[in-house]
Image (tube, rainbow over all chains, first blue to last red; front, top):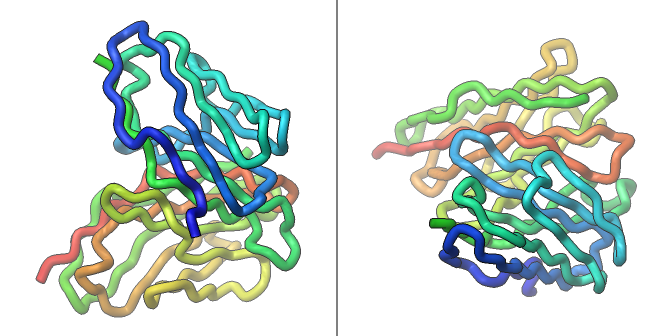
Length: 117
Length: 114
């Protein structure tokens, strides 16, 4: 079972460069999320999607864009990378139903470590 | 609005000793509560969850947590620590009327000493 797969796992960028992180899930989940993890701050939600073709801003959306053209994929883009975006990025997905299934349980990828110089 | 506070960013326990990780929450509506664990260089995985059924919740790897509404707490315990419990633990809260959007605490790093 692949679950949630993130690519790439590591990336080093120079300030001003652009890149895209890809997240793919094979669980047919409706909801997908991008979080960033920084020391002492837990996980903070960047953007999320409640279904194919939809996206919404989370807690820290500035400097990021996302797209959900296919249900199984959720892309996170950085148009002009900044050192403040050095972080570990996690993609997650969840089922929409609360009753009878794990309410709100998120399934996480293994993370993508991004360094911006 | 909702938030989560985890007391102690680092906890050191001896192998075989009690593990106690503290979590307090605030929520304007009845919440769902979760504990996630993150092993080094891995993503988070669910340890246990409270979804308004039994207030004492048992999870994987011998962990359990008790929901105490009067104290707005959801502390995580394990009677006897094992070396494999060394990891970072995150408490999270979600309102019951949402679609699963979680608010995470800052995390507690657990170190287990022989």
